[in-house]
Length: 168
Image (cartoon, rainbow, N blue to C red; front, side, top):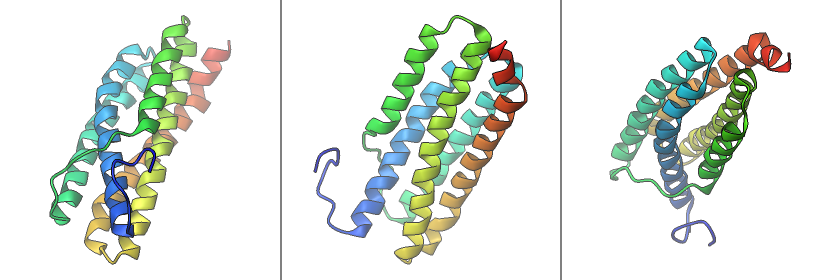
């Protein structure tokens, strides 16, 4: 089945696969965020990346809670999408010399990550409800709310100062 590590026969299988996908993604993001914070020159952006690293660690704990409620050990499956987004971010960052332009590039990369996470969490919340697994909804909704808030914060930073600085 292409990128899937095993056949997915049921909606439950698809739910678990997607859960494992976002678990892997969140773990990869915890590795990428410190580098992004280090590269950022805008203090508010740097602080935002550091704050989101702490939130991401909490997202992992929330996912582990979901795995526990499913009676499963937390486990990730390789996620080519998040790997690609992080790789592209690293490549673009290595090509940008101007610190203001780099901050704009970092925001764009971070928002690509956030949008991916928003998609995954939104899907998992919907599927948990559809599968009658309402006990799984709250931790997934907490993660979804954080991702949406981070995306909004990044938009506000970009529109209020960072993009303007990069353009001049």
